[in-house]
Amino acid sequence: MATVTTFRRDAPGTALSAIAAFGLLLGWATYTLHGITPVLDRATNSVSTWILWTALAGALVPSRRGAVAGGPLMMLFTCSGYYAASTLGGHFGAGGLGTAAVWTVAGLAGGPLLGWAGWTVRRGSGQVRAAAGAVVAMVVLGEGLWFGLALHYWTGATVFLTAGVLLTAVLTTYLVRARVPRAWLCPLLAPLLAAVFVGAEELILDALIGTV
Image (spheres, rainbow, N blue to C red):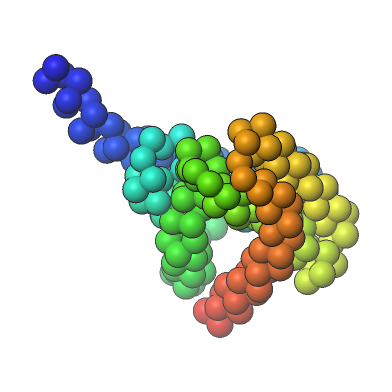
C-alpha cells in the first residue's frame, strides 16, 4: 500500500519531468532538423510544431493541474533546447537574447492554455471539451491564415489550412463519438479563435522587431 501511495504522490513530478525532458529534445530537434528538406524546413519553422506537442502533453497528464503546469514548463524547456542547440551551432549570441526572451514569455503565457486544452479534450466534461478542441485546432488554422494574409506564402498557407481543417474534423469526430454536448462548437469556434491567434502572433512579432 505504501508503494502505491508513494507512486501516486510522485506521479505528477514524474509527468512534469518527462514533459521537461521532451521539451528539451523537441527544441533541440527543431533546430537540428531545420533546413534539411523543404518539408522539414516548413515543419520546424512553425509555431504549430511546439504548440501542438504542448497540447498533446497536456492530454497525457492525468490531472488538470498537472496539465496546466506542464504547458508552460514544456514551452520553457523547448525554448531552452532550441537556443542551447543554436548556441552550440554558433548561430546564437547576445544579440538574440531579446528574441529568446520574447518567445519564452509567449510560451509561458500560452502554455497553460494549451496544456489545459489538451487535457480537457481528453478528460474534461461538458461542452467545454468542444471549446478546448477549437483551441487546439486554432493553432494550425491560425498559422495558415498568417502565412497567407500576412506573409503571402500561399503554398504554405494552403498546406496549413488543409491540415487545420483535417485536424478540426478529427477532433470534432472524436468529440461526437465521445458524446460531448454541442460538439459542433469545435468547428464553429476554431476559425474564430484562429483569427485571434493571428492577432497574437502579430503582437509577438512586433515585440521581436522592437528587440533588434
